[in-house]
Every structure is written in structure tokens, then in C-alpha cells.
Image 1 (tube, rainbow, N blue to C red):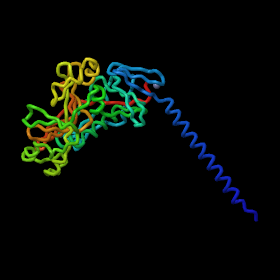
Image 2 (image 1 turned 90 degrees about the vertical axis):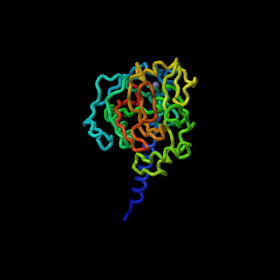
Image 3 (image 1 turned 180 degrees about the horizontal axis):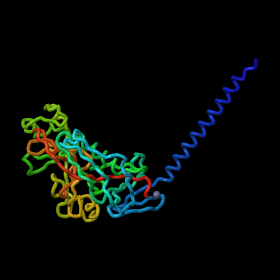
Image 4 (image 1 turned 180 degrees about the vertical axis):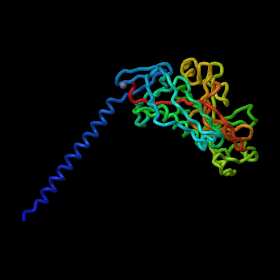
Length: 326
Ligand SMILES: [Zn+2]
């Protein structure tokens, strides 16, 4: 009997190869199309421009007609993730105005394809307490922003300390600490100096060796890398606590940006999705980064190495990275 198995097999193979080739071509076309449709943003001072289509905006000034999608379910923050005694429930705020914050390379391919926007004012109100707040807070504020302020095309998150530093063109010097209570401040000049290598370590460990994760040993506490810093406006400059006579960052050209970040009367108080800690009064103090009273602080006071816990209330500052501008 005549066997056509071979022929059928060959035909099938040819078909598979053909389909794979088409599939591959389709993928490449789609990729090319994405690339051609996506914006290529560049920033010059407070202006951002797309070299593809010529769209242009002014950071901290231009408003964007972004509409978040209403969440399906109640957005909650449970007590065991905030440290606060009660569960918290959030609704999206209405009539939000979105403003251009900057540009970003979300897919890390070397091209700034996204326009970053944020709310003109902080929104909602979130309470964290103690070690629990320190441990889960950053993830939780990102999640709450995502659930409240995303839509089908874009995902919201919280503002980060890098977003703020980028917007203000500020480069922090390093982790800060004080050896005289809180009179004069020093910087490590980096963010990788372990607490146990500082001169003040002896004083810190003799005051207490509590860590927010509950390990609570001298070894564990000594391993933390000091990363906290804070800066604000003094005279016409942005200065850090450890370097109050710094004149590298004049504020004259970033008035709008400063108002967006700090508030028109330096009245904004909101959480920033980064963890930070610093040393004062012979304690290592742990917390979530924040903006308040005119200061940008990559450190916080939720928990300290003597075991003190604090309750802090602040708003949220959602950020959305837009690939398409509505
Ligand atoms: Zn464009």
C-alpha cells in the first residue's frame, strides 16, 4: 500500500515553518509599530518635547486630561499592614487635576517613552504606625495608588524620592546623622555606610538594638546602611540639613516645581514610596520617606532602635507613567 505519511509530514512541517515565519514577521511589525507610535521625550529645563510628534509641555504647569477608572471593589489598607489600630478604606478623589511631573524610561531601553503626571495636590489620607508601617508601608501606598488611580492603559503608583529629586534636579549627598543630639548634622557621603562603622555606633547600641523586623540583635542593627537625608529651601537655595550653606541648587528657576512638590504655602504633607532612616539622639530612626512643612525627607520616624513606635498620618501622591497622552 502506498504510504503518504512522509508527504503529509513534510507538508505539515512546511506549513509550520511558514506560520512561524509569519508569526515572527507580525511580532517584528508590531514592535516597529509600537516604537513608531511611542513618544521620544527630551527635557530642556522645565520643558519636555517629543521629537516624534512635537508635543510639548511645561513641568509643574501643563495639565493632562487623564481619567482614572473607578475601582471594582473597596480599596482597603488592613490593620496588619499599616500597624494602625483600624482597617482603612479609600475612595478615589473626584475632580483631580493631573499635572506634568517629568519624563521617564519605564522599560529601561534608553528612550524616555513615558510622560510622568501627578495630582496637582496630594490626595486621600493614610495612617501608618510603628515597625509594621515601616515594613509594609511602601508596598501598600504603591498598591493603594494603583488600585485607586489606574485605568485600562496606565498603571498608577506612588511618587518616589527619585521622582522628586529628578523634578527638582537635586542630587543628595548621602545618609545623615548627628552625634550631638540634633544640633549639627553630618553626612556619610554615600548610601552604603553601615551603621556599625560610624563613631556613634557605641552610643547607639548601648541605647537599644531593636530592629523593625523583630530580629532585635546588635549584629542585625549594625548591618543597616544609612540612607536617610532631608532637604528644603533656605534663602534662595535647596540645602540639606548636613550642608546648610550649600549654594549648588538655586531655587530661582524651579519655583513652579517647588510649588508642585511642597505646596503653595509649603503646606503639603504626603508619603513618598521609599524607606529611609537616620541617626539622631543616639537612635537609628526608621520610616517612610515623606514631604512635609517644606522639607523633602528620605527618612522617617515610625520606629526607632530603642523600640519607640509612632503614628503618622499623610496623604498620597499618585504618579502615572503615560505612554499615550490623552
Ligand atoms: Zn510623540
